[in-house]
Image 1 (cartoon, one colour):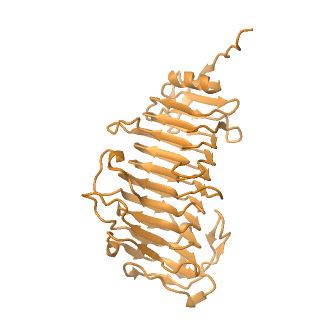
Image 2: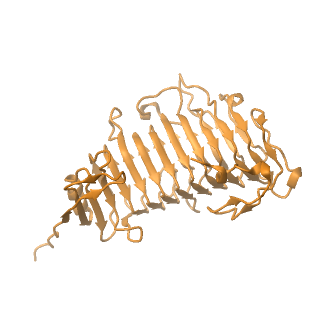
Length: 393
């Protein structure tokens, strides 16, 4: 008996409206089932096309050279949030290489041994992947141990990761190497037992002008957010400079746990403001220098402003400062510090430089303190506008 014939792709010519409102006449909505159909559809996709993935789980899919255009991306998605495209197992759940203006939406990626979703420039540092959007996706159970990331971005510019959820990974929830001009917003990073989870989000290897905002971190690794890191010089994009990361913003986020919610590591600048930190496990912040290659400047110039920090006796050292850094160049201003169970008599933080206009010993009366809905309910006027509740984009 002959083999089963692969059914033809269901292709409908439509006018597809992009997120920017542009209508692309003649764009196609292509419904596929299985990896072979997906590869065939992606190979012929053009600006404005939408590939809707259905059927059973896929595994280890790699796509290269997809080229949408600004205002008319190629979209790869599941049918809906309730019926996402499923990727299970494999070394990498889904890989995009050397792509431009591609949107991933409604994907459910689980159980990959390496990285969950891997997006890169295909090794061409002169031509980064760009215009990539990852929206409303779930990536879970990646690794479970070692340098295996839920979402890996290498050489990606002008990108957005929106409303995604990451649960359980080995290395980073999101690891960025040489990424520029991007935003991660309204995402959740949830650590799980049995996974090594080095950090929630890491921006290194020459990353710059990235904003991480309005996200939720719960037990999301030893370092919730790693501004910088340690990168081999050959992996920097576009080339190694004098720091691991610069012009990074971390704002409006809520953190529960982590040994240290925030770390500056070989970075230049980095503004951390209007976040809420609940019960860090060892330190509130770290200032470190892990890349000591010639020409690299000390970690310097970061700012920590208008945050709310609720801590307990587990925090004996507020700021862990490593050698080869410039902690005196960091600025601390307007943060509200409260030690659980101590009231107005709680400890004041010992910081690398004097804090301006700090608030100490005022209970923020956090509601839903150990979840994404946590908010300050205290009417104290000195807390007004501070923490994640006070963030305004």
